[in-house]
Image (cartoon, rainbow, N blue to C red; front, side, top):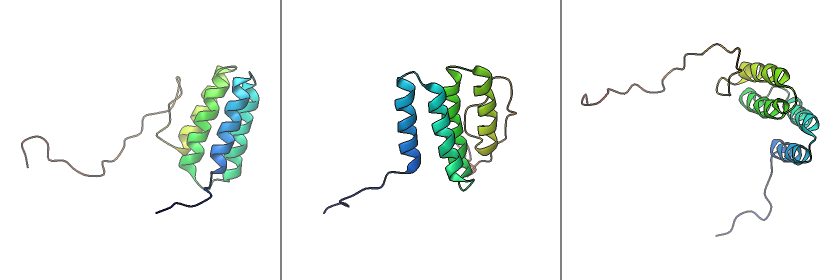
Length: 107
């Protein structure tokens, strides 16, 4: 059994690798811009992914401008409630259980 000869790499993965390459050479603002371009390219089609990418952007921003990083995290939280929360913001969200468990000894 053989797999496909050629694979597909998502554009977001390429963008994150390019951002990492920029960051390791000390160009963290450019890395954050590269991740933002990937967010813009999504065009709102996948908010969860958009939020996660914005969280990655915040990680790069944190190295040079913590206030900007906090703002980026706040925006990421609007798109994806599972990303890191900003230090001074982001109200907790009640998550809904997917199944009710009877608890120990109540089966």
